[in-house]
Image (cartoon, rainbow, N blue to C red; front, side, top):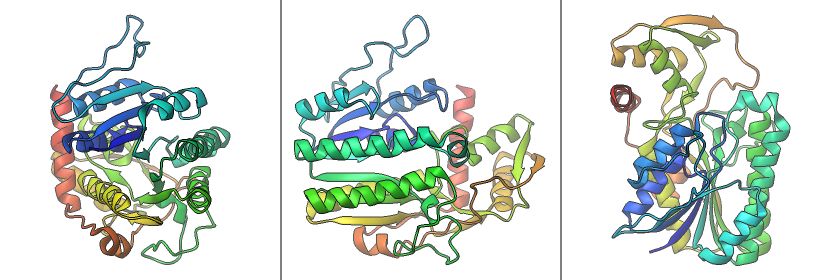
Length: 344
């Protein structure tokens, strides 16, 4: 049994990782600040589903002041800390008392377009918060670290598919720049303090519990409700959509690899390597829902890239990553989940 600190563990990817690690018999401590980027109740529900315990809300509809609890289980213990990764006091207390075997760092301010409007906040959370975690690992001798990076670091890369060895010095959003910065800083801490590390470049993850602002979730909801969808550009922009179960496979195998090896610093693409353009994505959702979309045509947005496409040969070779969910299968599973949430 290992003990993990998971930052951002109440989010989409985080809650799935919490669930998987608990099911494998590990101990998990989550730090999440329930940022108002989207309704905190959604994140509370995510985590409640993952651990099988309902989080309590106080009378004023805020997160309960006592937002820390232990899940009694035959397989593992779970603890939630309602706090910010920039809070040195909270992190210091945790690292001093919990004796972590690994940090899985998923917390970040998300979103390309919002980062253009508020770049300073993105630097503060994504870069400063990550550096504080690196410092804590250095101080408390935590030698294993998995970090969520992003396909956005590739920008409008001329070479497709994207390889980890490609030059990524031409970000087109502050969000992408912060993710690249954390990759570089991570290497510093690996080199100076021998912290073994994976930087995982996620490619457009979707599936149950997906954030409501992301395209697949937003399109599904608006089509189902008969409302117009925002359709940016001519529909030719394309993404390497990766189903959450496949992402979990890659994350868990990365965790295993780090525990089994030393002197590790790796940047790894986790994608599907199956590119779907905006028109195809919309058509697949329409077919699965059995409803036609009302389309509001809009110009391309600043910061949006034309295509993402992962070369996953490194992941296959290094950790035996093998995504298995086709886009059609993934959308069917997502819509089934969406319908169940709507009914409940």
